[in-house]
Length: 169
Image 1 (cartoon, helix red, strand yellow):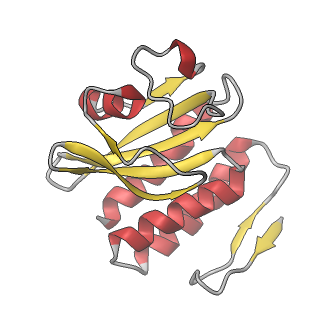
Image 2 (image 1 turned 120 degrees about the vertical axis):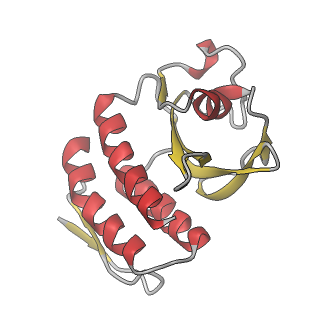
Image 3 (image 1 turned 90 degrees about the vertical axis):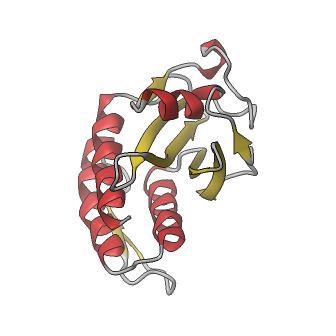
């Protein structure tokens, strides 16, 4: 197990670097829950979740879009510069927002209306994050530079993490 320490985190992050994804999700999920339980600031929590996911899986891009004024507005993220605003009727993020369901896209070039914020992004998974009142608060967007990089293992692991975020909102 690789131990990664950071003075900005209340705990060290521990995960088995070469383990399969299911194992890494299982290892980081309780650590994310612990990070979230000790902090009330939403921005800080989302930033730490994005950092943990980027560090544990080295995804191309990991971040959040928050619902503001009827649009999805860029929130905390890890990766290259991203689109700042996404309309609810645009792209994978907009689709996850309007359908209120997790969306896995094996090849973003084949997704109708895909927004190419970065040409290196090849596949994507987007999960809605719900506020306590049941409205969509935002979405967790994870991009990979590889085609067909996401599966139900990612859906299950990321949905567990999203439930922890929702509990902390």
